[in-house]
Each structure stands twice: as structure tokens, then as C-alpha cells.
Image (spheres, helix red, strand yellow):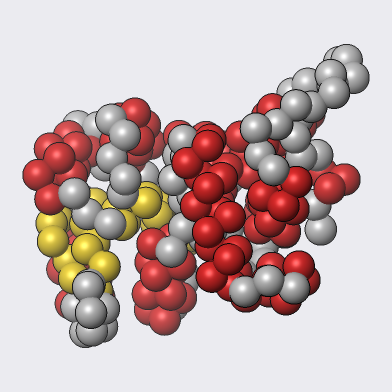
Length: 221
């Protein structure tokens, strides 16, 4: 079984080492690199190409948000999962717009963190649906001055259906049950969506679709 390759970006050594020991107890997880600041994170991701990056916000030399922007701009395929002490909308929104696949608070349990790593590696979001709606409401509110033009999308009708249900926080299996298709077929549709939109996660795809006017808050659960 191929292990999920994880990189830890955290300036507190004790927490970083504790997280590494926690993750390496799991048979499917492997910590391939550890960084204590944002600049080191950018260097290490180029060398190790992790599947998932666990990213803190408050980092010396280069903060987690700017490190996330630079990593995503370099088109690395790593999914970035933010682990933060801050739950302000501005932080959540900024990281999602920068390309993060998920956002967790440091109050999560060990089990929740491990499952979140597996989830973002599978291309799914770990945001709670209510947080997602707050972010989408913010984005939608940026263009309320005039009615949106009719949306033209490069996605097929089925791909848009899958993306809409993904935005509601449904798992691949739940989406498949609603559309009477297999979870594997759902994953294929999502992979096609990611490829067409040149994004790496559900969250990025949903945000892009809302910004383009392909989805609105009325379309979501």
C-alpha cells in the first residue's frame, strides 16, 4: 500500500514532533519532511513533493498564508491542510482563496486530524458546510451591484451536479447515492472537474465556480 506522504510546517518543535509521532502510528501515513518556517517549507516541498502539507499560520520568516500562496503558485500537487488556532472568517477565506484544501482548528482530536489528512489527499474538503457557506456568501456578496451575466461553463451538466453536491459537504458515496452512480464514478467526475479548472481540491473548485457565476448560494444545501 502506498503511504500518504505528509510534510509538517510548524514552528513549535514540541508540537511538530508530537504530531509526527502521532501520524506515523498510522500504517498509511508517512512524515517525509518537517519545516519550522515558511521559507524552509517552500524549499522542502520542492525536494520531497509531499501529498499533504499540514500548515500552521503563525510562522517566522514567511507566514503560512504566503507560503501557501507560493506553493500553490508553483503548481505543486500537494494538498494543503491548515491547522490553526484562529477561526476568523478572514483567515479561512484567505487560505481557501490561496488554494488550501481544508482548514482545521488545533482543538481537533487526533482522530479528526488523521481523517482530515486522508480526506484532503482524496481530493475532498474538510471544511464544515456552515464555514463553506460563510465563505461563499462573502464571495457572492462581492458582486451584488449588478445582476450576473448568464453563466457559461466548461463543465458538463453531470460534472456541475457533482460539484454542487460536493459543495454541500457530501462524501463521494453520498453524492453517488443521490445521483444513482458509484462513488468511483463520482471521483472520476471530480477529477475531470479539477483538471478542467486547474485546481487541486473540491474547495478550490467550488470557490472558482461561485466566482464564475456557475453556482450560487441558492444552488447549495
